[in-house]
Image (tube, rainbow, N blue to C red; front, top):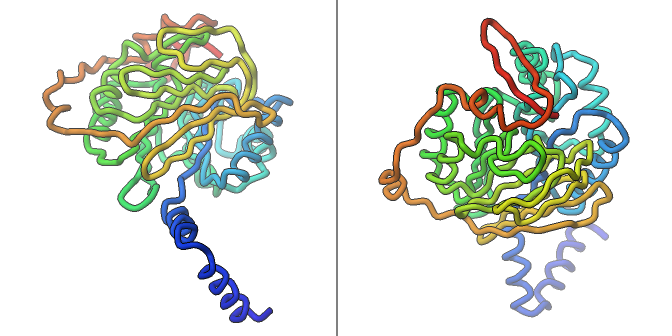
Amino acid sequence: LPLSLSLCLMLRSLCLLPAAVVALLSLHAVHADLVFATIGDWGRSPDVQTKVAAALAGQLKQQNGSFIISTGDNIYDSGISSPTDPQMKEKYENIYNQTDLPWWLVLGNHDYGHGFKGVDAQIAYSNYSSRWNMPGRFYTKVMDVGPGVAVEFVFIDTVLFGKDEQQWVENALKASTAKYLMVVGHYPVYSGGSHGSVMKHSSLHSMLEKYNVTAYHCGHDHDLQHLFSNGINYFVSGGGSSERDDGGHIDQTVFHSGDSGILMCSLGVATGHCSFYNETGALLHTGNFAPRVYDPEVAAELPAIAYHGDDAIRVSDEDEEGLRRIVYESLTIVRGGQ
């Protein structure tokens, strides 16, 4: 049929629908959710990573996803040495090739294997790939959810969480007016996995609570976890390329699985939810939450955040696996874990 005739028939059919159905269709079109995926600890290129990549692509297509967030440990075992490192093709481009959606990434401890040279290489790879987005070690990104509702992501580097970054993070959280405020890092604040609650005693934990963050996304433990404490959801999505069911439940645990897999999140004007899927695409768990309520005056009355000289060094003794030592220009950082 000619385009004009087809359009007329479509409009005529719509007009024959009950008014309530038409209103519902219009409401859905205006208030469409913002959908994204979170994946961590993925850059290995074995069979498990390939299976998880297929599940990721499948859920993004099925749920009409818009982008992908990485919680770090992007390239095992030691990151990359340059933006032209062949590992980028082997462990990223050739595996996540079923979708051209953009990625927004943070750094993990394994991404520091070549010191700051490797960090700069991952940041520079943003200029080599149309999908890879890492403008710096820490940065923010605001996206619209619906009329008058936005989500702000604060991407941070928990491996080198020094005073300058801590001040920057607090400024970003304090200034945000977004209805959904989500922080993305690598090390967990709470975790029942083998690495434990690495950032629990850091200034980051205090900031998340003071500024009423909606959720904190992280990886490091190679499992899938939903935890909840003082109004904040903590999602550990570290099952991007391996399984490790060696953790357990802690007081904050809502859900825990040793499966490999991904986290899919959907944000709407009135409510949001995040769901874990395993490598086969099976739904494991869903956690719901509402847009945040943040009162700057109330936050101003809370105690000031105490910055630490280097949270990364201070909390390193909570890691239970083999320690790695990185030395770069007289800066020594001891971190652990896989």
